Length: 248
Image (cartoon, rainbow, N blue to C red; front, side, top):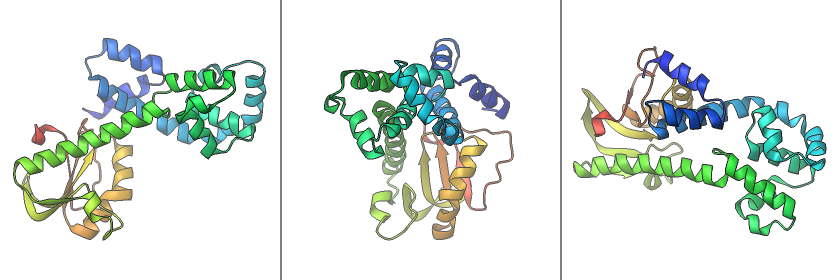
């Protein structure tokens, strides 16, 4: 996908209604749109979290007066579960207890609070237990697809779980022998069940990919939902980026 197309999609996916509309009307895959929407929501919520938090006392007052978590969140275009977390913090509910309540609604004795948390969970596609599980399953799907590709070709490798006791930074697959991949000799492979826009790639380079090069040498990262292909990504030496096509 070219960068301009991606930026247009990203800017169009501000609310859940935007996502639902584009799923119905655009030619793009639902999971790809959900991935891009996730990028949008997480980055915006991270940027504005403390700004909204400064309003927590007023939000609690409005909630006490009968305005729901969902309505308060819609007014601010903020994830309902995160807004509920801030309001409940003003009620003296710790983060640990809040997340336990959200994950086990039957444990919430107050009828209104239980209903409100349920509605917030249903509305929030990213921070709800269901949203978190969907992201986890997407990541697990990408890893499994990579491992199956290697196993089908009898390429010996070690998984991340096998390496954690030996290294602080561990790729999804550390190859036991160098592999010729697109003309490069790679030692490791990393799965990303996301879309590789410049922000995402820079984040992964800083946190994971550069350390992998330092530890293991050259490697390849696959973005299963594609990446922008017409901008300079400034990848460090030793990192090759690809999409799903070589694995199809």
